[in-house]
Length: 547
Image 1 (cartoon, rainbow, N blue to C red):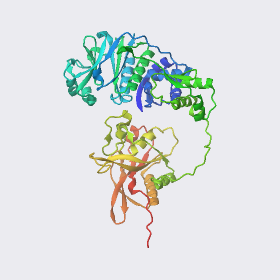
Image 2 (image 1 turned 60 degrees about the vertical axis):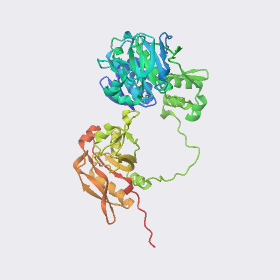
Image 3 (image 1 turned 30 degrees about the vertical axis):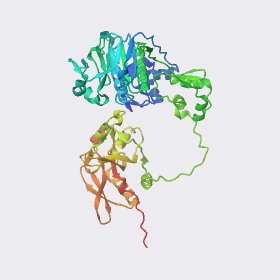
Image 4 (image 1 turned 120 degrees about the vertical axis):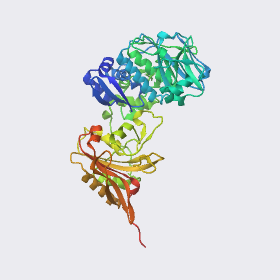
């Protein structure tokens, strides 16, 4: 999920919504409203809808939802020429461009554009690998433009934020953005230049200072380079739609003498039969047309015309999903299956699941990928393995423990009635020399079992009694080693040890009451007690047969 910030006033102005309609409309579309502070709304956007990564895209969908009509987008004919030189074919071969005329930019719109560009880079662009965007003020440059690849030391220009010229090689070694994205560039560096050879951009690294976009900019040149033609085309359309929503006139450009088409609809077969079969409905054509229109599509004969900026439409089932969203999942019929089946027990950790459920705990299932914010808030022990090129910062770290994710689940469950009892059994990536190690070394995958209780009387005694009950059901004897553990209340935390015959007791996990500062970091107002163990020591002991 990608977190974006949008202006509530702008959202209402562009969509026609009233302030009290914002949250129910966003909820119906599947856009969680994570927070609200004055005019600022925090929204979580699913990775399959990059067109929602700006207030313009969200407002566009809200408008269609409210009116069952789509806004009409048309591009002016191409006048400006772009040449994509053959030298880029083995560097970054995909290229797209457009021009936005008569743009009126204020501070809020400029920040929205910057946010959209950054979020598209992180998500759809896979950290600029598949796609990178450049926005340029056309006042200081002259067409025609050229996209070509040159040697690292052949050309000098002033990169954005600097005052002195640098070669591409110097930028890759000395500039912050150059060091961050140098792995995407080989010996040949792609450049975009104008008629006079002035550099506009060094994609995917940095734009030139010469074409910096400001509040006084009126005509913007959009360039988009990458390794995927489809991703580049969708990105250009997303940007053009956002600019058009703000009143700009979009103009196509010639790329190698061919118009680079903007706003060309995607065409799909009408899914009337498929929708009724998959959703168990009996929709007629007018009803189907209305539901599709609420999601931004238009029906023409036996075809559906879908927006050019939709990246998630791969086939009929995606249109059917939009119909289900428009109807509301709670309004769909829920018939019993037309076949019988016999349930079988869950083979992996079946006894642990049974014991936890028997004590009244509900199972949670969270992603093995989390983020450093959740781990830091929980003060979880030991290092965590970071993803080098994450799709989004929300999923940039492999979890070393389960309980930070469970605390995050509690933070999103504050509206639920108390008490709340949750457990999870799942994989973690922990240091090879143990989850409490302060040094990373090699990481190994292991299964953990964590359970936590949240209610006004939640305490160490309760969670320890539950753990002892589970251990006894498994045939194990546990002991405690008191220890002040970071993130737990001093004097209310301990290591959990398992006794195995005459062998010395072995540490297998931790238990305790969460510190109030950690609870505050997650926005929790009730006490939380938890334990977490490695599952290898908690498997059910089988009786030994004696001859």
